[in-house]
Image (tube, rainbow, N blue to C red; front, side, top):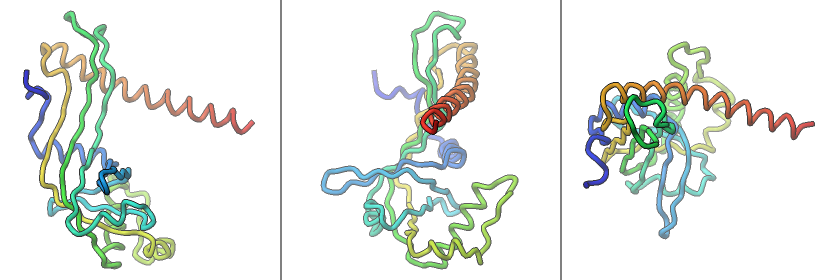
Length: 205
């Protein structure tokens, strides 16, 4: 059997772009001396089909985000355990998820004015649709950080969409798995945050 199964692969770039826009926090991977350097940071897909990001200049990975160096990027969508109990037919346990893997090259953008515009654009994108906060060009706090931020542009060379959503099951079971993915993600976030904040309260006593 060929791996991964074709029914778990989604080669529709528009579907992958939707994942990137909905879940912009990326895992950015570079390799130096056969050792991976990994940073988690938001990347924004722009109208030119490029990804734009910013990184602390003191991050060791920053020096690799230039000169058309190769990078690997992972965007993670919703995921959860699927119990056989949700199916109408007899099945085994599994795990469903949506992941986008990208291979790309990266170029540094040195212009401070471009960096400022990019920070404003990224904030506007992340604040949508309410836009309760607007990062103004004359924001003094932003000005103070510009010397400590490196901007980079990513050109995507290879796309891979992994949409494991019980596509090999009957339509009724596939719909049940979809509903479980929605339910489990909403519930698990609430349970996790309640547990974390409870533990923090205990530590502060």
